[in-house]
Length: 94
Image (cartoon, rainbow, N blue to C red):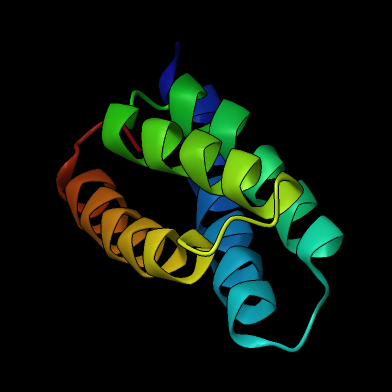
């Protein structure tokens, strides 16, 4: 991926993480939260953020199944998103 595409994906990722955190903190229903987690899975994967991709997948499944651990996984996803943002900020490709 060229520097221009990397910058584009990184910018989309920063926006998506912000939206993700806003939705998780809101009173949105489980379906909306599952959709937001699902959106993050592919973008995290495209940027090589494996931890975030995996925890977002677990979160999506938890919300779809109305699992009681969804809130705990949402916290873990937020923490993984923060780590991913930090790692991307240090990359030199854009």
